[in-house]
Image 1 (cartoon, helix red, strand yellow):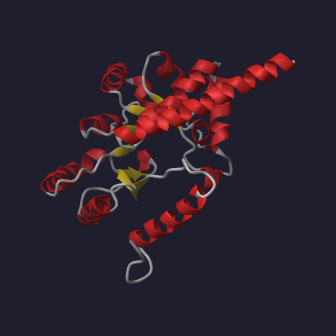
Image 2: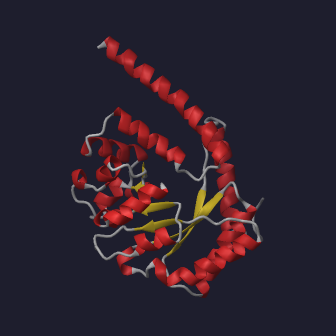
Image 3: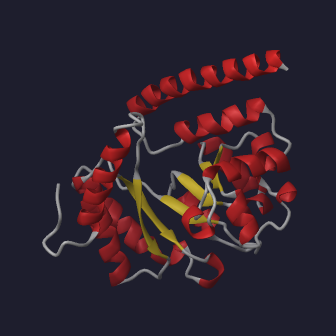
Length: 259
């Protein structure tokens, strides 16, 4: 891999990411990164077709770096996923012909409106995960399908509160999902823009939802179990994580004995 001819574009971005990750791995050997190709939500048309084709090209060229495709942006003000179905079906056919997959990781349900339809669209399009999914709590049957299909919900506590979707995190629907057996992961959403680290999401969830150590362990495991890693990579990563978790527990016990 290397820079593209103009010294810019996705190929150059991936090349830069590779260099940065290699530098980090000099000190943290287990560090890994996957990228999801994203575009702002738009109606189906030539621009979306071009974006999907570019995502498929990158997925084929960098399978260890490009995890899949997503459309992002404020859902209530932008077109529904349903307006893009023709383009999604077309790119899936092309992907099968080329022997490549282009998984979807759709941002869906970040809305206070009951009639938000992106959750339904994301399920119909077999999204691997659902970003935010706040509207899901208003549709019990859809919750059942998400649970049965083991589709993880990417919950972003700090972002949801900052953007006004959940004013009091104690009322966040994620605790209902967790207790109902739906797969949940914690995510930082926009830490660079909002100025906080991932630890804040875990801390706020821990405090607001009255979680215990077992809950935190489950959330950490889910982040690996429902990641975009290959199955073999998940097994290796899980074993490494378990070693670190066991060390963490030993340190907690030792600290407790001191007190």
